[in-house]
Length: 67
Image (tube, rainbow, N blue to C red; front, side, top):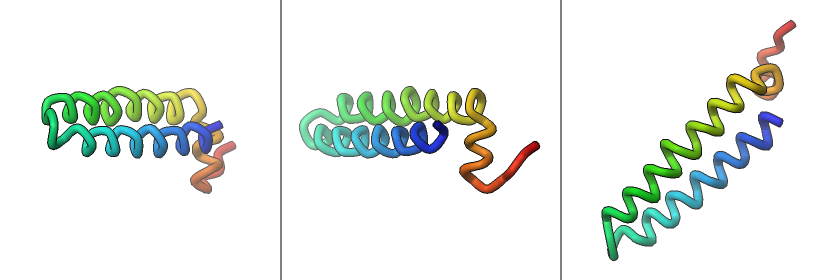
């Protein structure tokens, strides 16, 4: 499950960067809002869920076996 959340975070981050750069020349404030929502809102929420709720599978994914 941690791997799915990790890949989801990579995907959401890529989408946020793409749309942030897409709107950068037209409306920089909209680009900043899109990027900030993705980077701070979505990615931090996914990382929190991955590290707190699925900590065992996250540690196993990184090679840090816990008992």
